[in-house]
Length: 358
Image (cartoon, rainbow, N blue to C red; front, side):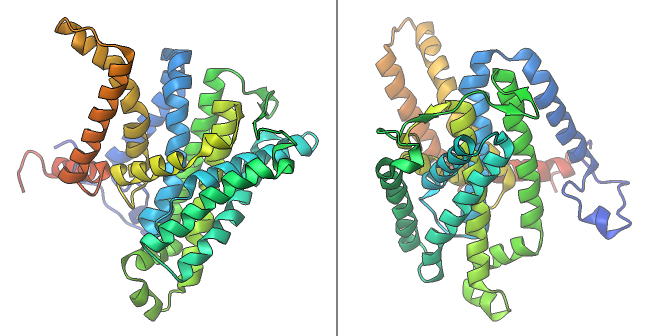
């Protein structure tokens, strides 16, 4: 009864095409943003910021970029870790080589470097698809690993490829405390999510989804596959590159090419699949599942075994965590192959007619 559209009349196209057409959704989103920006920094410890919230925000942004390419355009990519690495090292070179380079322009330029890199390795998508495209994008991962280890100029002549940044500032305000890093990442995530949502709702988003559903039919009705696919690679790589720069600058502080290994690419792909393909909300659900759940299991399992009087070592906790985590992934994919976002959508639809079953 409390989630109905009764009395909410749309009298213009603008009102009908809102991102959140139901008033209750707008209220909930505003409350969530208020809690995220105001309440969370007052209640959460520094450990929670650094270990859970900041990684969750950055990985949500990266999963958002992967979802643009994989979920909306249907182009399988295993090079997301490489795009993050290019964004991180690109932003680093602009930040340290250009005198007095501000942080935000450095992040944007790093994202643009990842954009050009993504377009370059997106060119095979014009000829191949499916598993063959996944292998072609996986080449970007190996190429980036070689590039940042062998081309010393990219790492400021560091012999190991390890670099670091410090004294981060935005508009003269230092970004050094856990709260300031959280606010900065949250603000960028909100802006990027809003831009991505408007893109996928527009003409370019409809072109991506047409290519995803049936590229031959899309070409017949006048959609240019080359433009649609490469634009998806460009937008996706830019978002992932900015996420990579944030991961390096804000979360790690110092990093090396191994921080963006192929494991990162697989984790991002799992986030999108578990969260829900073709859903902006799915990026957040998938990131929460992959980033937050293992930490909660690590804290919960010793307490659970302690109730039964069983002492468990740290190694056993780690192994049990991986087993439970893998089992949950398989269970979710069997029960709801469309991801957690589909469960959320189904729950909302049921609320709209509750308490009636129809």
